[in-house]
Image (cartoon, rainbow, N blue to C red; front, side, top):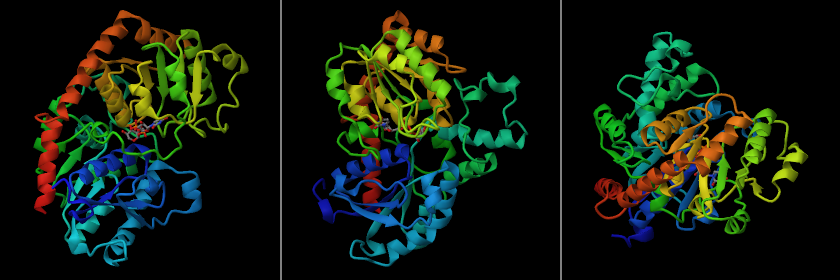
Length: 451
Ligand code: UDX
């Protein structure tokens, strides 16, 4: 079966067009390819993946109808909203017009789609093709999202100050302040999106990029909530370690720099692919890092500081002060960085991919969630798995300096490192024969072959 190759059963995979969504879908594609399926990635024109990095896949571009202005200044929520409206008919047309690239619809065995691009499910249902949803956030995030709707109905959004610190019943360790609210666009549309993206409709199953041992309780709740099989088959990046997924050019120059640093000495800093910083926050982060005296590798995405191209506005005094122990890049090969023995800690926004990548390499985290599911992940890192340190409140240099020192130098940090190494081991066990992710992956493959 592993060698069915190009003639294997045909799967169409539809990723969400953002880094944190493309990454797990392309990894899943690589895994399913290795199981003998033939893979077509049906992607929007917006943020289209690099097809040359995946010669084994067929790529199908869905016309998305976004204007140049929408693409230049993407507003996350409205992009998702527009894609779900615009792409339904164009995707259907792509699948039915039977170009040279495409097989007839009746040869497609399943459409696997990111839950945020649910137009795909409507097309699958219409064409009578089985479909499966991929949720790219944690199980804990998915199970608590409906609570936001209840709170809205009770008039409790924005969440009143008096409730913020209270624990969410049945969902400990989450507090109401950790619930995954978005910072983008209107609240009403966000909540509408929550409803639409969490509906299973005609789909046959749900895939999660998570691991049973990390999220036993939320996964059990999901099993009760949904009447279809749930497949927790993460961490996908460990099952598909060579899958090229980056939308931005990686600066590999930081690896020789890491080679010169001592074991566990470097703190790696990245706030992911979406978050922005203002000038004051940038300056506080910079001086917090400088004053900690630790070497650091810092990813600052071009355009992530409004008003600046990159780091030209940064204090010259800071640059001079850290020149012997800092490496600042526009985009890093993050998985290689986290796997490097010089890296002893990660200061992260706690996006779900980054969370899994850090756990997967046994690197403890300073948690600075920016929005949405990152709050849930941060709370799990600090209070469930106890492998992270919470940075709460305003970004302030003194707090940062103390957090970096604690993580990198103090007993508390060392204890977190031991616990995260333990989790890493459990993740490693989950993906080999007899492990939970390996087992669920076999079940998923069996289901796909049965279509
Ligand atoms: C967004 C949301 O912020 C996140 O909470 C949600 O779970 C997915 O969508 P993002 O900001 O992209 O995610 O964060 P994350 O999920 O961590 O994904 C970022 C990806 O970019 C990771 O796979 C990471 O390895 C990669 N990355 C990041 C790089 O390859 N290089 C970098 O320099 C920074």
